[in-house]
Image (cartoon, rainbow over all chains, first blue to last red):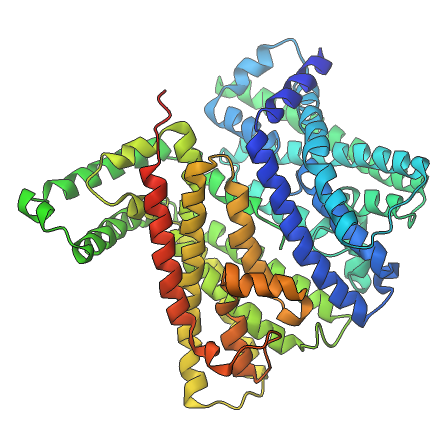
Length: 261
Length: 317
C-alpha cells in the first residue's frame, strides 16, 4: 500500500512538467555561478578541502542535482503536513488505518524519486558537458552513491518530519520551516563543501545530520569517503531522528485528542 | 546563494495565516478607493495620472499589509531576523572562502564586500517594492488574478503591493551593513563624483532589478508554471553580482552587460569607484549610465507587462 502512495506522489509531481523544466533551468544557472566562483577559489588554492578542481566542480553540479531531491530548502511534504495540522485535518489522517510517519515517508520517497529523475540528471549532464568533471566510470561507485542518496533522503525526511511536527505546538510552521532551510542550506554543504569549513566549525557541521544530504553522497561518488562508514553515519542519524519523530508524534497525537482536533 | 526556492519557502508560509481575513480587508479598501474616481477623470487618463493612481493604490495596499503584519509584532520581528540571517549566510559563505584565500578573481575581501553590499541593497530594494510579482504565475493558475482585473486600480500596482513584506528590510539592512564595512575598510580615492555615484547606484540598481522582476512576471503570463525561471534571473542575478566579474567567463559577463543588463547594477559603476578596469573594453563613461539603463529597462518591462496582461486568458474554472 505504501508503494501505491509513493507511486501516487511520483505521478503527482510528474504532472508539473513546466515547473520541473523551470527548476532544471534554475539549478543550471546557479550551478554555473557557483562553478565559476569555485574555479576562482580553487585557482587560488588548489586542493582546497582535499578536492582538486575537477572534483570541486563535480561537487557543485552534484549539489544542484540533489538540491530538490533532498529538499534542502524545504518544499517537500512538510508544507502539506503543517497545513493539515494547522487546520485540524490531521485528525482525519489519524483515523486512517495507516501509520502517519510511514505514509508521509512513502509520499516523500515518491517525490524524491521523481525529482531525482526529473531534476537530478539534467544539471549533472549539463555540468559534465561544459566543465571537466571527475565523474567515476565504475558502475559500483555509482551504485554506492545511490545508496548514500537513499540514506540521505531518510535523514532529510526525518528532519523535515520533526519540523512539521513542531506545528502541533507552534500552530504556525513558518518560523520552524525558515530555520530548517537556513540550517539545511548552510550545514548540508550546499553553498560550500563542508570540508572547506575551517577548524572546529568544520568538525561541527560535518557531525550534524545535514552533512548526510549533500556532502556524504558527494564524497562517496568522488571516492573521498569509504561507503560503509558513511552509510553508518547516515543510518545512525536517520534511525535516531526517525525514532525521535515517532516519540514526538505519539506525544503530539495525544495532544490532538485532548484538544478534540 | 543557490536559493531560488527561498522566496516560495519564506513567502509561502505567510499564506495560510489570516489570508482570508486580509483579503477581505483588501477588498474593502479597493472598493473605497474606486468610489472616489469620477467619470470625467477616466477620460483624461494620461500616463501621469495613471502612474499617480498606481502609486496611490500601491501605497494603500502596502499600508494595509504593513498594518496586518504589525498585528503580530513578535512574529514580524522573527521573520525579519530570519530574512536578515538568511541573506547574511550568503556573506558568511564569502567569508569562509576568504578564510582560505586573500584574493578571489584578483579582488580582496573588502572589494568583494563592496560589490556584495551594493548588489544586496539594490536587490533588497527591488525585492521589497515589487518582489511579490513573482507570485503572478500562481495567481494565473488559480484564477485569483481575475479579482484584481475588476478593481479600478492598475493591476501591476496591485500585484506588486500584494503581501507587501516589510520583513524584506532585513535584506536591505544586511546589504547596507556589508557596504558600510567595505567603505570603512577600503582605501578609495573619493571624489565628489564617486560619492554621488553611490546613492545613484543603489537606486538605479534597485530599478533595474525591479524591471527584471516585472519582466519575469510578464513571462509568467505565458509560462504559468515557470516561477523558478524568474528566480534564476532575479536571485541568480543578485548572487552573480556579489562576485567580481573577473570570476566569470567573458560570455557570461557579456550576457549580463548587453542582454539582461544587470551588470549596470554594480559592476560597471562600482569598478569605476574602486578604480578597477571592466573586463570588457567599454569606455569609462558607461559607469554613469545606470540611471539611463534603469529607465530603459523599466520602460521595456512595462511594455512586456502590458503585452502579457493583454494576452491573459482567465482559467475559465
